[in-house]
Length: 368
Ligand SMILES: *[C@@H]1O[C@H](CO)[C@@H](O)[C@H](O)[C@H]1NC(C)=O
Ligand SMILES: *[C@@H]1O[C@H](CO)[C@@H](O)[C@H](O)[C@H]1NC(C)=O
Ligand SMILES: *[C@@H]1O[C@H](CO)[C@@H](O)[C@H](O)[C@H]1NC(C)=O
Ligand SMILES: *[C@@H]1O[C@H](CO)[C@@H](O)[C@H](O)[C@H]1NC(C)=O
Ligand SMILES: *[C@@H]1O[C@H](CO)[C@@H](O)[C@H](O)[C@H]1NC(C)=O
Image 1 (cartoon, protein in one colour):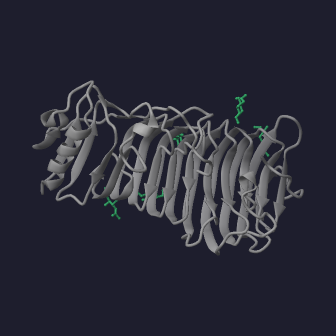
Image 2: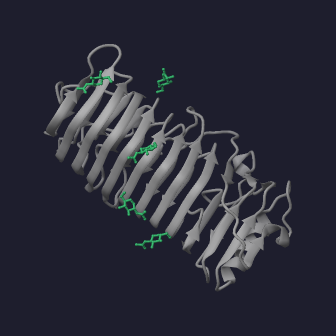
Image 3: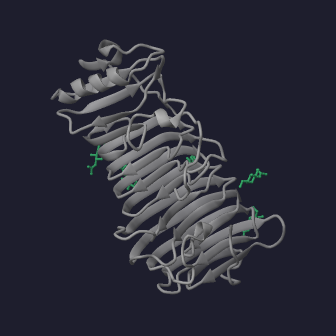
């Protein structure tokens, strides 16, 4: 989420399998001039408009087959609930410059009660059994959404693909991600400002950059991050495990609170447990000025496995607003090349249970 995109040609592909159920208001793209191996941009737009105008339950359907789509924004509000069912494969243009939609290839906006897919300003929705592959940017950007659950969601992209966060959440409340598998080149899940009551359970992450809160504190007017539970996840072959990152020299104060990480297995993770309030890639900021983002009520419990670097736990809090209410409980992270270490600054965590490495035993060293 923090790197400039400079890709040449990547293709995006959305696959969705769902159970067909017969219902009256079915808007089949083929009825609107769409056909397999053709471009369905216009047909899909027309089918959506017709479904959206129907006051009763309806379904927009793309049957099996391969279709091309140059970009679309599904606009609400709609008169009745709509189910979007994609049984086929829809391909984006190979060259991102040919994508016709603003910002993202496929967008759903201002819709209530959408079944299956959704992203901007979506409420009360379930997105399940979706695979998103080789996105040219964030795979999913959840913005301004309330009460949305992602189940059995799969993200797949190469380890070296830039800026391909799996699911990025911002300014959204009540988002659950469960039983999902995310392999990508950037954060598996990232939480931007205004993320509230987020739950991430039974998720496998890797490769990628782990599960991240932030980065926060780069801009003015950021909303608090509040209420995160990450539980029963496996993080494997990633750069970070669970991380909270904020920029130094933030232009305004901010809050990140009530964040809990528990029952997590790390396998070959470079920075398994990390609070980094000196996050400043490519020296884009003044590191000498402390971050003004106040981090509090954070727990790391029952986190075990292997660290790919010696420093397995690093809690580098702001000297301006030290972290408060941090808890480390039952940590067991081992390092192949010797005894794992941990380091803490501007934080006095409550320590319970077993601790390997010994908690806060050394001042931090720089991480990559
Ligand atoms: C959240 O969304 C689900 C799925 O659409 C719905 O069943 C549930 O009632 C919603 N919950 C609230 C609190 O609105
Ligand atoms: C989301 O997860 C939380 C915690 O696991 C749970 O309490 C809540 O009911 C879930 N919400 C939905 C909409 O499934
Ligand atoms: C933990 O997650 C795994 C999948 O990653 C799942 O098989 C298992 O049932 C989950 N355990 C609990 C207690 O939810
Ligand atoms: C460990 O993770 C790194 C990515 O951080 C990966 O390149 C490397 O292949 C992994 N090692 C093993 C043994 O899987
Ligand atoms: C930590 O994990 C290692 C490797 O899995 C295991 O051998 C060791 O007994 C564990 N230590 C504690 C204190 O649980």
